[in-house]
Length: 188
Image 1 (tube, rainbow, N blue to C red):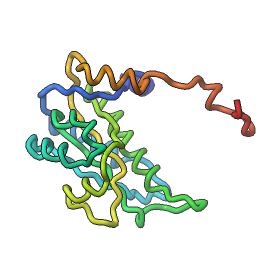
Image 2: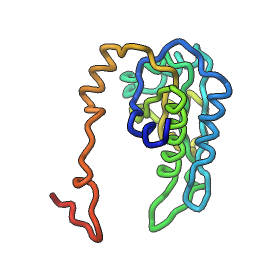
Image 3: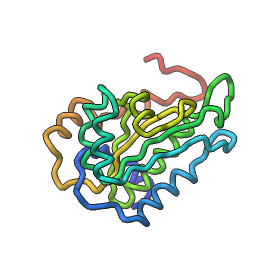
Image 4: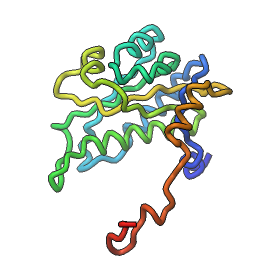
């Protein structure tokens, strides 16, 4: 697939086949994240990769009250937790860039995965303290997001269909609603 086709077709996957992700494909996914740009090339991101099925199932139960809506991660063959060290990040114009840098890196992983037929789903509904405690992540490290990775099932579950409908996953604002030229004039 060409890059633009990957971007256009990528969707959040919440139903995973039992097929394992091949080691060489997982390596490509992780390498895509490593190669991401970051402010001042600080590379503040760090990732925890879960592959043990039992550990993933336990993790799914320990990501906090908000995380109970994400029970589907228990069926994924891989879960990646995106973390960042704010002290290793750039601060420019009074803004910390660890969130941006880690998001770019994680998105590159997701696009690389999709190019190989592997789905993912960016999750923000988790309790950071619970995730940090379960994975023994130090207090100075922020948990930015997490995602299951795996080959999509042929058919979406009722839960997946409901979430996609509720979230309006395919709805995107038109360009004229998000782009302005020469100066700000988006108060429409």
